Image 1 (cartoon, rainbow, N blue to C red):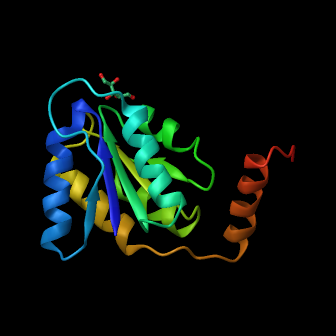
Image 2: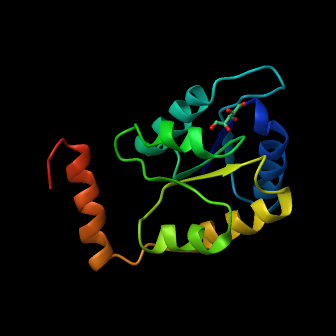
Length: 148
Ligand code: RB5
């Protein structure tokens, strides 16, 4: 199950990506927002990030104007490694090396077809573990308030 959410700047892209995922047979849970009315991005970021952090959803997709604000907000939830990507290479490597669990994109940055390519690469890539697992574990220690 993929959790998806957005603010008012990215509703159309969210609907398009939701349809795209569902057409591939991937179940999606939509955490809003649902229309054009102003909707603060930290709200949907919180909902999607919590769904991923609790394991209710396997991974998440968050969309705002730039992808930046919503990724910053999502990363405030413990256990979340949200990445803001505007090309497929970083999205793929963020899975392989950083075990990213939320993909963020900007609807004012990428068009829908590029967003689908980025999403496909991100979904297909697996975490490599090994030396990368040790680094991700260091990130978790920062989250726990440790100075490295
Ligand atoms: C909304 O205007 C815009 O600030 C938001 O979508 C996002 O780009 C913030 O990072």
